[in-house]
Length: 83
Image (cartoon, rainbow, N blue to C red):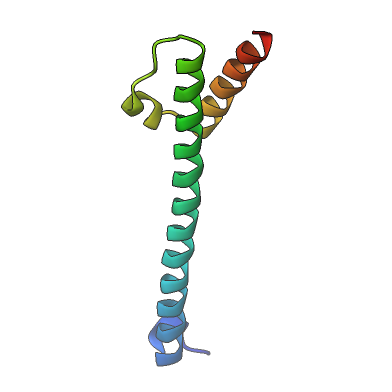
């Protein structure tokens, strides 16, 4: 019977490498999400200003999902294009 990989030095090293790579990948995904989120928030607030609307508080927008922000931005763009 083969030993459990977690009980061998090689297995422990592989697990450690996997954890490090997982954290790095998670950070990159988080950065991408943050950049996209910030970009949408900025565009929404600019269009609200251009359209003479009250701008939504950044904290409220920051708590919104990407899907909700994308939808809101699409609505504002449609309103802008009607002018």
